[in-house]
Length: 356
Image (cartoon, rainbow, N blue to C red; front, side, top):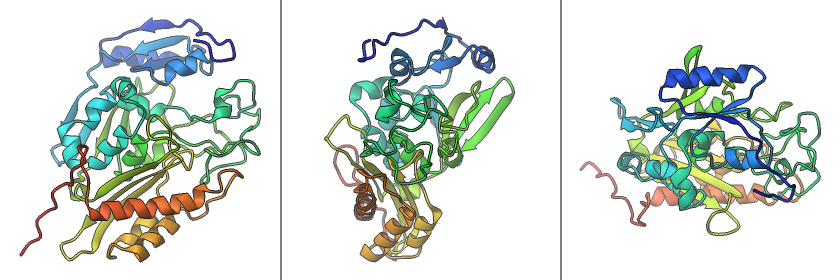
């Protein structure tokens, strides 16, 4: 368990409830002094505990809860259970058929072994991979509010170019979340107070002056499922492009989720576009999608959309390259999507028939 800091895991009590009601009662302890955390795959949480970046007094194992189903909705949308594993989700026939953008994004993440363990809900809650956040010898407002941000003026190659603040320039690391942002997902959560829905755009937060708060999820709330609206019209023209420093098991420098609904006359009826690894949350701008709607796929429209998406970007020294890289990656992703979705076996998806 060593990390260079002599870290060790601080013991926590452990519960494994077999009902959602029991789990919510256990999580209600988070309101008090005893920090209680749910755990499913533990692929990020256990690392954080080993490094003593989080020291929960209690763990609530949610793997026995009936939250692992992936099923179609009556309206053509999809429900993704919170404890369904990333691998099972990415390879699910309904996801591959109607949400190839999500499938591609998930398969670009981590390694097969981690995808086999990581849960959908846990993916939404993973913490930044900022080096300074993980190094307890350096100040970090995300780890210790008010202590300062060591990244500002430091090594910033992987840091934010959008939505940052004077208190934090960390980025969100998830690939899955970039696709979910583009697909207008809704997160369903519950606590002893009841259930509520959180639009994906509101789930993750920008740092502002409270960078230690990553999401709008309350401490005693549990993610039940992620719901996706119908997206079959985007299935034939989508692409997830991840630019990273090595081919596998690496977090993105920049990633793009792009999906187009192209009409029989060749114009773009609707577009979905999101950037990853450039901000504290997946980055989506309505104006960038509006630029594409009604246009014909091509260099001019794609460049305009890219410019709208990175509008307001600010470099943090060493990461200045990410601004032009983001523009080029958006254009490349849109070009790829316009040509047609490539499935997870490397084959082009059949194009919808054009009416005679």
